[in-house]
Image (cartoon, rainbow over all chains, first blue to last red; front, side):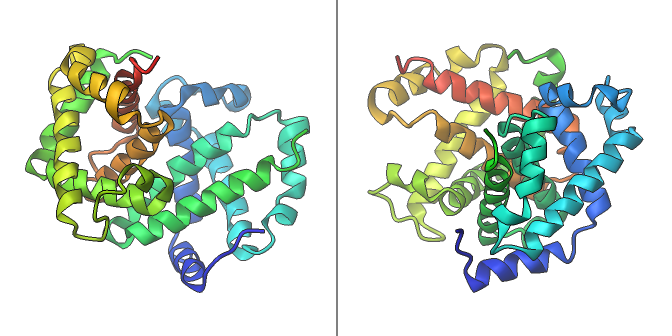
Length: 147
Length: 142
């Protein structure tokens, strides 16, 4: 089980309380599809992903980004119980969605950049370290039930 | 992975906007890397790694200088960084995985100080550039 110090929990929850989940989620997913275009392979039914502009304006990308980041909010609420929290989602991503867990790490890295751009100097090194740890642990939990 | 014409001009654009802050950003990149990925400190047992360290500042300046050099010779990064590539292969032998970690931290620093510069397209180009630099530096490893 992952250990979170009181300071880390504070850095996570206080930043999260200021995150606009819809905007941030949409941006993170769009950037994932733009920066690492091979990730578009999972979204054949999303319509027009032919350019960064198309991706950023795509309503399915926005909606899915919001969904993904909303789920991330569950991690923030269950820091001491991440494997259980993501157990079903992990099975889903393995058995139905067939997503290589490397993609969770890519999305995590993108989310960090989005948070950095948004929070600027408030995204201190300690904050970045804590959040990088969190995205890593979420990625691990999502990969945990893979077989 | 190939840098397109757009990628090259995006990257040059970033470095011209960063301007004189590059050295300071180099140091901040390293500080964030040591903080976020403590295993990277294993390459610097001889350094004072505390916040504000003069050694980290100096090293950050070197790292930034190399990135600027690569950006200025973006059509031939391998040529521009050939000596550095030799150094990393023969002497430093930093595990290749660490270049991605440094790259991530550099992107974070650019995002923090110039969020409007780091549009998704520029983000993509800069990420590709940083990968290309990492590839050049590890190209002679074996």
